[in-house]
Amino acid sequence: MRKLFVGGGLTAVAAGALILGAAIPAQAAQPGQMTVSTTRVASGGSITVSGTGCVANGKPVSVDVGVSGGQWGDHLDTVTPKADGTWSTTASLSAYQDGALAIVATCDLYTSSFRYDAKSIFLGDSSKWYDTNSAFSKTQLDSFFAKAKSDAGLKLSTSTVTPGESLTVSVPDDAGYFSGESVEVWAHSTPVLLGTLTAAADGSVSGTVAIPSTLPAGSHTVYLIGVMSGTSTSVPLAVSTSASDISGSVPGAATDLVAQTTPSNGFAIAGIAAGVAGLGLLAAAGVQFARRRREQQNH
Image (cartoon, rainbow, N blue to C red; front, side, top):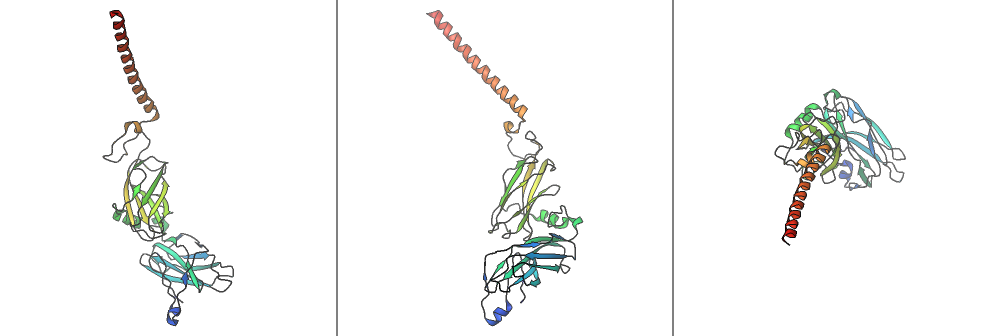
């Protein structure tokens, strides 16, 4: 019984059941987890896929494992789980081109079935990555950076950060990300992977990443790139070396002098303000004292 894997999800078609007119098993809740031996596989290499929870009242069941990427996919293997519902298989990826892929699997319980959460992997030469934790090669990322949409509603918690601070990003459900896919967050003038988030069921993305201490001050762009959908969105970000450094502020943005001062300068400004206020009070007191003396002399 062969199953077809297409796009970001997995579509299971039980050919025999269709021929016999039987109903396709209903979708059940996922009681187990799927794991992969590695998320980075050398060109032409193999990957081991394992899982748990595929058991139905002690009866024999099966797991169909496939690979998915972009708008194409294929079946890798059909596995019979052990009595406790665990299973494992090793499959060659020699037939697939380098790039981002996803390993997908469905547990067929005959009367029902469930899909495991997909696992994103990268097939190719690790020397061609900006970051070995990324699913994309340099060439792929450069393409995503170039075609990123700047009008997709991507928002940041702040437009200016200092290294070591946290940054919250969010993008609405109509931006084009797949449900449940991994979404890489990049900062770019020099590409730096800030972290990986997971898209919600409706395709929206939200989460917090840390700004590394090594990220240079100046103007940058934040990119969110979907590992399975290839959706890329962007928004500007300024990085300053300290709270007093306004060189990295967004062009045209108003500058709050009090907020931009260092602690010592802040005390200086506060001291000047207090001094000015004090002089004002002394002057007012002097006027009041002179007025009282004139009144006393007149009486």
